[in-house]
Image (spheres, rainbow, N blue to C red):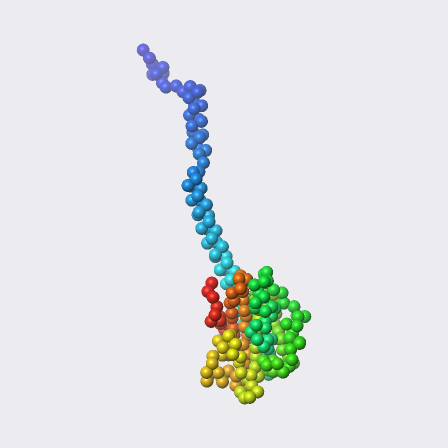
Length: 234
């Protein structure tokens, strides 16, 4: 008669090896193609969201920098008025900007260096009688305002146009240029802007160098910086 000990199931070495091999295969089974594709898709979505968020943050940071620069320009223009009795111009046209012309921004990599020795910075070659330089006489340019963007470079092109404010035949009526028309709206209310000395400072920006401008303005009567009507969204 068999004892309990004798009827106990036994495991041979071959059976143990078979079980161990099966367990190992189960534990080392790889991902299926569908699982791998799902992981890749998830990573792609996460990367897209991360890039979009980074790009937006970069644009916001550069936009904040522009607002700070134009606010600084406005303060320096008002300081010049208090000390010298007039504002200063740096250009006669909204396409005459520093450190480059607006249409050159898309060809630049990164921020653009400002140099105090550039004619575009000092405007030494501009005739005294040129329209929108009469208010400043022989004193004009970013150098007169001692303005330099933080770090000595910028992502945008800047300009300031000012007038002597004489409401008469020799007066400097604000120019009928795209940004000038936004800052100084046409109509009877225009007189109050050029019956006294005036200026408006502007920046044309191409943050991602795609040929599409972002435009910002401020003026002698403004306490903040505005975005131009023609700006494209983020």
